[in-house]
Image (cartoon, rainbow over all chains, first blue to last red):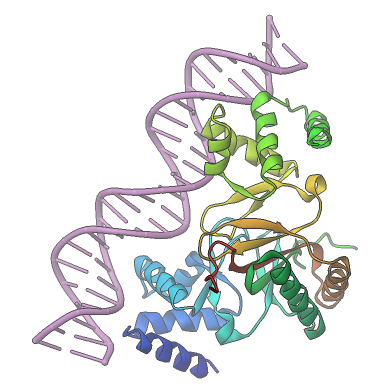
Length: 148
Length: 148
DNA sequence: ATGAGTGCAAAGGCTTTGCATTAGG
DNA sequence: CCTAATGCAAAGCCTTTGCACTCAT
């Protein structure tokens, strides 16, 4: 499952003459297994062998290489996830009470309509549009007031 | 122009027995004048009389009161803007090179379609959807490679 | 008058960085 | 082998907080 991801990561790092070490593999494994953006704290808990400074350094390295995306905005600290190139286009739901974050997919026709609107925006404004990100905010099942 | 905003802010604060001081008015003025999310650094530069600690305290206060919204995710530090209740529903464009952020409005029919899709999502997942946020990422006019 | 608000400065907490050691290719 | 990568620990930077003074009501 994650083998394809490892291959892409290894290839991308190789292009830059960067080594794909055990710690870096572990980082990719953890992020792939989570299926949602993780905080550094969570990454560390999931991979006790990897030191904090290495995690930060490798997240920065991966982000520069376009392999990892920093998701800020939910709660206070940064969260990290594998880039869309590796895990596909998706968006996020964030619970405003407990801070939990989950991946969300939206209908293709809606994505198409949004892409069209953003292309129009680019034409009108001289902005170059490269990507979009949708954050849905609300309450998760656990935090929602129970009806009965 | 900003008078209507001041009235809403004053009323909201009054409900909670909170004073609408000069520094707080200045903060609202700066945010209203900017028309885009500002970093604390920018707020301080625009209102030299207000001290840093007060700005942070008042931003936190306003955020709790739902009058200001913290926009994180563009660049590294938090940005703040007046809540949609005060300035209307909108989204953001962020330049990935220089970090500039601008407000963006999308077509009403697209917003409707998105709301519908999110309502469906809520039904399917037991999530309570309260709001959505779209960030468009790309290059601003100044940072885009010039064609000629 | 009187408690909220502010200023100042120090503390906090996540993140980054320097240097010596270890390990990948 | 030889440089990149890591560990450890200290430094950095934005943000928060304690305390005394000031101002709004």
